[in-house]
Length: 58
Image (cartoon, rainbow, N blue to C red; front, side):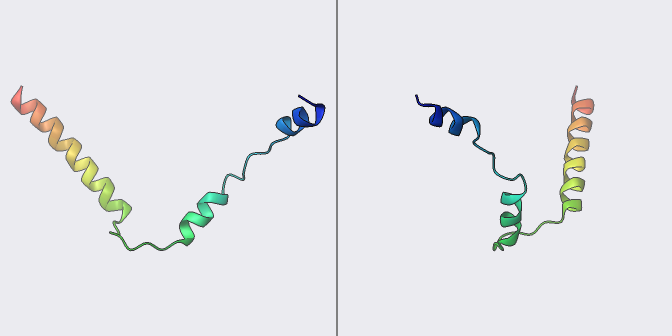
């Protein structure tokens, strides 16, 4: 392996961290839109139901 190839491997840079995120949020998709608050409430409700079911059935 030549010195040039070794140097090229060492200096390979990683892409910018926010580059993909900017492009992701620019795209509009036709899908179901759910508010984050609703997701948190539904998750907490499911956890509560599971804990109550476990307590009552055991």
